[in-house]
Length: 605
Image (cartoon, rainbow, N blue to C red):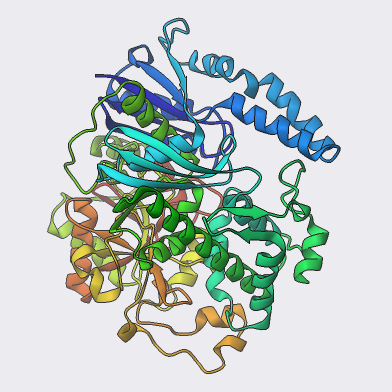
């Protein structure tokens, strides 16, 4: 029975995961503990949590696995600078000392940080390194419900690979095809993220949210898409792409793109973060999204051709593009798709641990007891009622205590029915970027102003950002055209046509703010501009407490659906502890906080 600790660190979204006898025991991002969003720091606190959860010490761990191979990455760095020389001298001078001091000697860096754990013995520790895209692939295939599947991983870049197609069968994963740096769909998306004024490696999902504000019939959209496909990217029949490096700086520069060339190409100035979003920005985001969808579907088709598999597993940062995931479903290439909920670099820690467990140690894959082996992504820290009570009393916070009974769920549902915003904190934290009903901010989707209230007074973020619905699994098809269940909120689905309202005749001429305000459906807060929603289906097996709340909501309103957004504000990590949750509750416009079976209401002035 091997105990394997997986680590991702030193780039972004550091995380740790523990696998014992092939079973996932715990996984968490370091940001949840340090409160530094997307932190690249060594995940010391996440490791300590994983060890506590398994009730073991670091000396009992059989192997510690890092999620990529630094020497291969260093090789890529050197070869890239040589290929582009004399360009990139400033970037080279800045990057090389860091590599020589830290990353090239990663084994020493890992040992130095692991020594902070009580009982760590450098001489006894077994350090392993897995390739980046193998870690991504393992994170999706081994937890999936499939014994055989095609595996597609797409991200920015690992060591050399930027996308890969593999076949997984039982314990074996065999890589069949790779696409290499500097040609990368993930980096293309990040380049547009930068150009449109958002932060790289964290703002990519904003582009996906902005795209539906674009007008596919406009001259600007058509020009932007043609410019992308004729000047920036060549899309090959096998799904691979070629990026014209004359327009990009990420290979050797300190920026993502050559701004002046992009401004000439698109006739649109580089947007700074504080600049107002205009229709052309929306059209450009839509053009990029459409190109991304085309490439992703082609890659999935090639994965099918190479593997002849009935099922597909997806991972890598691009797998968080839920609109592109829907396009794969609609193409009917595979019978079923499994997407790793922590598809980005955080999930690499889990994949590294699983790859070592099943490939290196040849541990058998655990029997399937649920829909998959991810334990519904509830792999993080939990806090007992005793802990919560002690915290509330220490801070002298007024509360009402309930049993987990019908009255408790009815009380919370009544607040939601009345239009109040509720912070909902239960059991184990989710692993990955999505709140799935344990660290969530909830609201009723039927209030027309709920989206704007949540964005402006709770999340303090851009007004255009959409919200996702959590819906009873058995009722989901009443509201959405779902192709399959969506437990992890990783696929979009259109709202049923009979629930949609006709837009005003001058809709396409409206500015963004007025487009957002236009009435689209009874469930305005979760209906995006294209009548789609990023759906989470909830059943009793996956989350009994959240399911019970949705059932009570259905009893009160007739609809077992809630707005479900992550329990955090802009630029902060999702809350982990009751202390984090209360702090967030206090500094936002939230009305009610539910910590376990304790209900706290804002004091009225």
